Length: 124
Image (cartoon, rainbow, N blue to C red; front, side, top):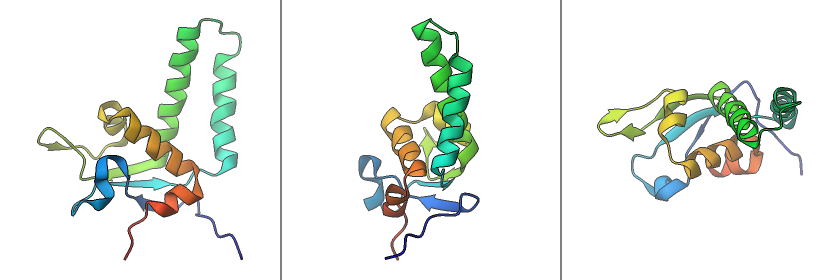
């Protein structure tokens, strides 16, 4: 059986499983790009470079979160059907700043995993 991966330049519509979203009539959809292993390693090298020589655990945590946010913002194109109060939030950075931790982590794991990304695509 052949293995067919996602083109890392193509935007994929991912429907998070978070809080029963996939079963919703009008689910939240995250338009993102697949992040292949080489690109994950790129973010790891950025993290290693920025934490080199840093001994303060709090600062290491802050740097780690900054690199994670960068990966998220660089690879999420837009979000549909996500609201903060009455206002729809479509911007990846604002979404990252307002969404639940479990939801953000699910999206990051999906962008890094072909299998998870495939599971979250809309079934016709």
